Image 1: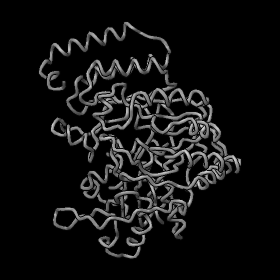
Image 2: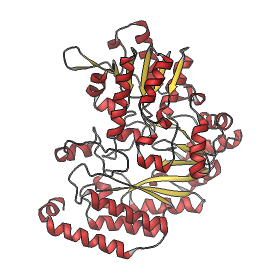
Image 3: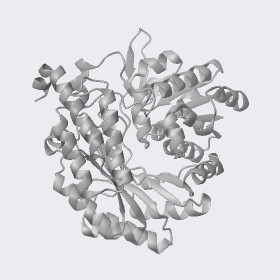
Image 4: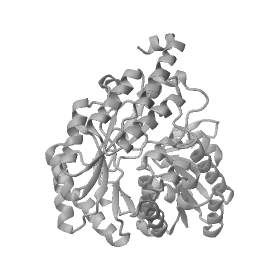
Length: 465
């Protein structure tokens, strides 16, 4: 028996528990489907609704697996962040599986960035890249007792206190050949009850592509790298058609970094969906420069309800510092284009990216007031290993390199302002958008706080100029 698992316990993250928007672990389910296609008996430990990590020990006792694969959902942005609590849970699961006598392999951004932690906890190997695509090879080696140094894409202990990397795994281009996720292994009813209780409908997740070719210098690409591999429009439409019968969601979230890179692909997707009667209202992510009139029209035909854009800032100089590759005017155009076609717009915003100052924050606020997106998500810049941004601020990082949970919004480097200030800015931006009312007193208070900070830290402000 092969036990496939992940380490996201919804109850352990207060913000996500309150939001009540859990998604099934897509990469984990893909790994299970691939292993079953290879003839393996597979069980799943879905941590999402489990009360605590001790539930995993109970599962180990019941299933008695020979191999445990801890494969995190690399399609979910929460996995890339890897909070301190989630890392602790993952390491607990690795140690528990080892104590139960199982061979253990781990895959996820945090394990790739910090392999020593996972190997010391008891893992036989850390699987780099897309773990689901390497699952069959490592299971075969573990079951047959073959040396792991012959399996590509692994990080191993070298037996002398160091680490050894096996040759990289070849990138998988034929995504249409992969099986659909093993939806039957999760408790779809538990997801349905949680979603409908909080939001009145069930949302489910899919992925039409892997990776992103753009070069935003704060964005980590530990799993897919800087490439973009896309499934065919027909494959996605067929998965939607089958999903309608297998799970019957009311809504789909496409977890792609960028859903559909070209007008032609999105037009073909709309036609394939309509031809199969596979339309399910959906939400997706894109870039402002990719939203044209033909794209918006095709998305509307296919059932798009909401498109999220990585706007990040209303200040062009901050976008340029990020190597974002977009212009403020394209944000305005994209938001208005989506609105004309009846599609809601969501904006991802990022505070604190150097050299952001108060005037840059005001530009972001004013852009919001001008264009009125339907929803926003606000964070502060988060230095992820392997990024240009991380290299720039690594000297300013202290012992803590991760948030405890996703609501912490902690500045992990020396920004222009502190954590408390950015939390107040986040709340003010949300108030402007969520209520539709301008609270000038709140912003006046923030301006005074910014001025006080300037007076208290003239040298820092000079360095950031």
